[in-house]
Length: 88
Image (tube, rainbow, N blue to C red; front, side):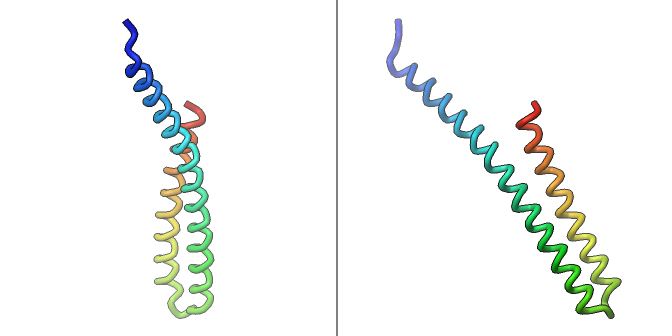
């Protein structure tokens, strides 16, 4: 026997899953784009500080490298995540 409510419930679940997958496909690339922009901004600010404060170059260089390394790790994680949605 066919229940009217059951079909709608399954259809609703499938629709929700499709929206979630679409959201992931759009959200992660945007997040990656933002991370790349943040990386470039951080790099530009670090280089500007190095030029403006040459007496503190050793300390500023170490801080800049640490911050940039963190951003690179974040981008690598995002790239892997985005790629997994397209190549799996």
